Image (tube, rainbow, N blue to C red; front, top):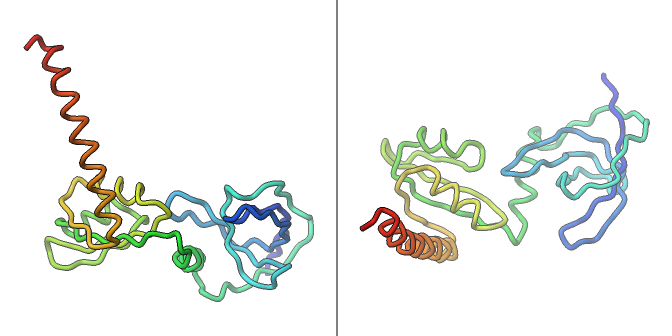
Length: 180
């Protein structure tokens, strides 16, 4: 059984509290636009996930440890289950007017796609802001309906209004530039 090296670092929690951590690293996970370290936290005697952008003063201690079995079996599922429970997370659901395989190819791992029929599917995304799902929905190039949450509909309406104003401001300027 291979041995691994224990890590020490300072971790800044969501509320800004900084703590010293001593962990046995298990795996790095890319979820959404963030990297997470899944590790056995020695001081808490439990599995934890740590956002890499919140780690500072990271160094290997030189101490070795035998690998542990992650209870969920899948590191990405472990991280996802932890962040899905955060109260500031937005659970976005949309009906996409495109086949599931098309939406999957454009969204990738940033959402879960469930086929409704040959021409439609349901897209589920979890994000800490509504900007990311809005950009993802728009980047598919497909028609869609926002199902949840209600604030996503308001967010989309604000985007649509800004885009409309941008078109209105741009068209007269282009007409003048073309000599109309």
